[in-house]
Structures are given as structure tokens and as C-alpha cells.
Image 1 (cartoon, rainbow, N blue to C red):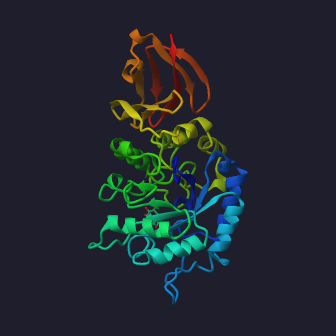
Image 2 (cartoon, rainbow, N blue to C red):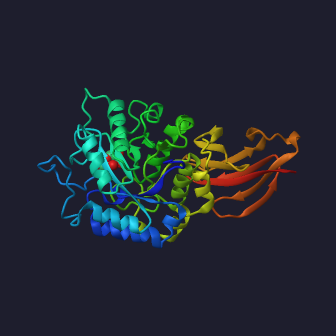
Image 3 (cartoon, rainbow, N blue to C red):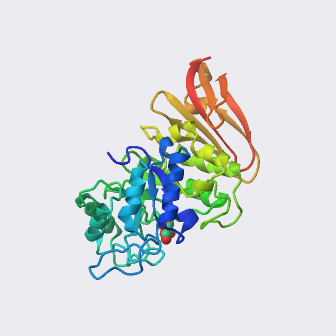
Length: 374
Ligand code: GLA
């Protein structure tokens, strides 16, 4: 089964946009393996927009830009596969890709066959230049069918930015993940807004078809293609990553893995956080409290554990009280929680009744919790 858990990997767009090449992809594949990302589950290496020539060839085939990819895409795919990674590419359901390259509109079956012949395992499928008279559901269904007909198992990553409430229908047309929002930028306002806009939709994200909140910007610190507004702090990135894991969202790294600083690398490789994201039940978090721009959630995990999340998405310090009664564990039950800080790994011991946490602006606290008698 494809996308049994939220897909994880790396995507070229956030940092590199048009500035991609075989050399870059080879280096990124090496870094994903050498720095432990593949071992942690980041298995897809995805080339986004800008990989082809501006026109198809005389047979209507897509042509990789020979300056960027001098040995063609099969050679890139072979390299990626030899590393133990899976290979992803990009096209578009509209009449051009967002950067103006040829897309797969009316070429769905031909292009799916081409991608399969190159050994592609993942297709991100965008929505720019979609004709007004077109039927989005029909076009995403057509590409899903073309991929199925290609003879290769290819994960279908639909990217129509939530148009026509994509969370309502992407599962039924065969997508394995679907972008639910516009593009992320590397600043707190952008990604906290993305997360908040999806609080209401997460019950529609589950195994085989996940709500995709866009590629991560963790570790970019304003560098690259999507830097805009105030650069993020490490705390901002903890909150971004933790929110994505709470929603069992796909984790596609957008930063330059070769140059990732140690703290952000450790964050994205954190076993507790990855376990929350990758839990096999992929349950949505239940919101316990919404107070002045801060949010508390409890998320059921598959083995009797829970994740508790406290997120201060506001611009001021907030003192937060997590009442266990609000998690379904009233004082009279005789039960409390044994808590572990998911980010630091620190065991916080057994607690009853409640937990107070004071969070500076943009900070978050993620805990793993087990029920215990107190
Ligand atoms: C759209 C998508 C982005 C990226 C660019 C490429 O904006 O939402 O994720 O793929 O196109 O041009």
C-alpha cells in the first residue's frame, strides 16, 4: 500500500526553484543517506518545477533540460535508487507548470508512461494555468488513472492548493496526498496560518491519502526561494515541525540538507516527533482548548500512548494550563499521566490534575503521555 503513513522526503522547490541540476540532486541524495535522513524515514527525493525544456520534442515527449540533466532522468533516477531512496518528479494539471514549463494537460497517459520509464516513484501534480472551463476533479482522476496504467507504482501527490475544498474529494479520485493551502513561505505568519486553516479538515486526512500542508521550511533561516518576511528562529521551527507531526502531515524537507545546522537536523530526525507523525493510526489531534492564539491538543497514538501539544501561535507570552479533565481524565478517576518531553526526551514523571506551561510567543511544548494511577 502506498502512503500507509504520511510520505516523507525532500523537495527541491523551497530552496532551489529553477537552480536545479543533476549534480545538486546527486549531492542531496548523498546527504540524505550520509546524514541519517533516509534511515529516519525520509525516503522520497523529489525534483519540483523547472526540470524540462520549454517545449516538448517532435513526438510530444517531455525533454529534461540537457544543461541541468546532461545524462537524462533515468540516470538521475538510477543514482537515487542506488542510494536506497525513491525518486519523485513534478508536472501540472493545467496547461503550463507554475514556472511556465510544459505540463501534462491532455498528455496525461503519455507523460505517466514517460515517468514510469524513468523509474519515477512519486509525482507531484500542480494546478497552475488550469483552464476556466476545465474540471479539476476529472483532471486529477485522469492522471491518477494514467499513473495506474503506467505499470509502475507511483505515489500521486496532488497539489491544487485546496481549490474546491480538495480535502473533500482528493481521496476519491486517487491522490495519496493533497496540498490543502497556498504556498508556504519561510516565516512564522505563513506557516502558522497554514496550520490554523487546516484545524477543521484533519479528520479527512488518513492512511492512503494525507492532507499536505506543504514542504517544511525548517532550517532555511531566510535562505533560498521562499524566504519572505521575518526570518524564523529555532523556536519557530520547533513549532512548525511539531504542528506538522501532530497533524500526521507529509514531511517533505525544503531546506538544503547538505548545509542543515545541527539543531534543525536533530529536530527533523527526532524519533519522538517522527513517531507522532508516523503513528499507524494517523488520528487527527483533538483540540482541548483555543485561547488567545494558543492551542492545546491531545492525539491518540496506536499503542496506548498519547501526544499532548501546547502551541503558542500568538505574539505574546501565554501561561497555559492543561487540565487533564479536559483530556477525559478527571481527578476522580484516580488516573493521571506519566509525561516525557518529546523534543528533549526528558522524563517529567507522573502528574495528576494538570500541567502548567509558560510559553513565549511562537513556542510550543510537545509531550508523550501514558495513563497511570496517581
Ligand atoms: C506552485 C506549488 C509550489 C511549487 C511551485 C513550482 O506554486 O504550489 O509548491 O511546486 O508551483 O513552480
